[in-house]
Amino acid sequence: MKLDRLAEVIAGHRALPLLVPLAAVLWSGLALCHEAAAPPDLNDSIVHAGLTRAVLGEWAEGRSGLDPWVADWAFGYPVLRHYQPASYLCTAAVTVLLPGDVDPARVLDVLTWLGLCLHPLLLYAAARWAGVDPWTAGLAGGLSCLVQSP
Image (cartoon, rainbow, N blue to C red; front, side, top):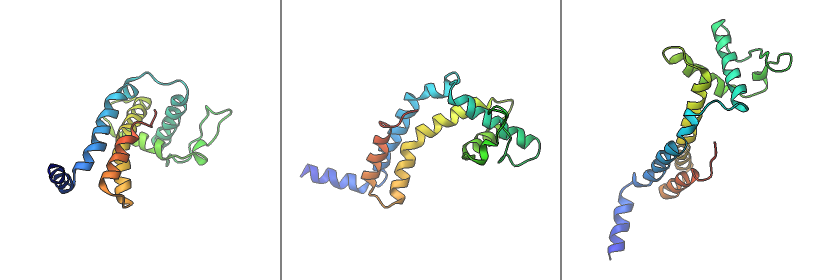
């Protein structure tokens, strides 16, 4: 009898399944806070920060930023013609919108941290949009933080 009442209460609260991915967002934010504060990774981060700086340089010259010439690659190469530019355009836009002189590499680190933290919530939203029931979507979002890696 008490279990039936508990099931009714749980079924009546539509926002309750959302608490699972929200808890995962909080957990991810705390567990991955070193991503936003860590020194730059000398492997991929150098390339990503360089491409963001190339977009910023293009914008400073009044161009679109979609086709910068990146001199760091061999004798130069238009990387963004063949590589997805959205993350570099977003990072450059956030860098421009922030007050003061902000390092694009640090902005990239913070945006990476934010993306990793919000992943459970975005997975929940995508699953709900696809028609998955709330509890399955909530558990999928909540458990996703256990399988992601920076």
